[in-house]
Image (cartoon, rainbow, N blue to C red; front, side):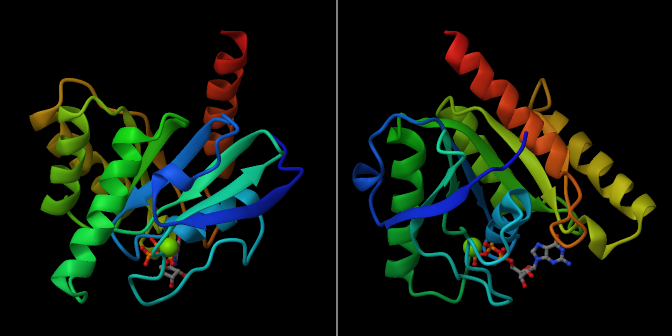
Length: 201
Ligand code: GTP
Ligand code: MG
């Protein structure tokens, strides 16, 4: 898919205030600092579109970006950033959970996972919560450039084995590097095929 246009639309603290024009939307979630905002910039090929930071906790709101005037990419705050007050953590958690459970336009959710780490409890529990609530998701491994290809392959394989302990089937899995622009075409094709399925209905 060609990205002809990618524009920031609005930031919100509440899913109820998000755009109501019915365009399908694709959201990125995952731990703080995993690379959600960077992936949005990589996919759209627009460097400063979503704000990124080397410090965790940068994205605090639900951010909508309209792509080709047809669909939205949504950048969400990360979960699990310990250096925040309990109140602020709980508030963000509520914002994320409400968005995921209530947002009708949410077409596909991508859970981002740092490809360098062993499976982390916080991510596995989050996916479990999605499963319990009947929310389908895909997994996007990020920062693939931060290790060699063999190590990367092994980590992804290990992760799949861990998932298969809890799940009968694996979700769609993508391996990316925003730094090296890896995974862009596959992700965009995936989104395109879902969009096409929606218009046929
Ligand atoms: P929060 O908004 O705080 O939840 O973080 P985020 O998930 O949006 O992460 P962000 O995109 O801001 O990236 C965090 C840091 O990781 C930044 O310093 C990025 O440059 C870096 N980063 C993100 N993706 C990649 C990648 O694919 N490769 C490398 N080497 N660094 C990356
Ligand atoms: Mg961010």
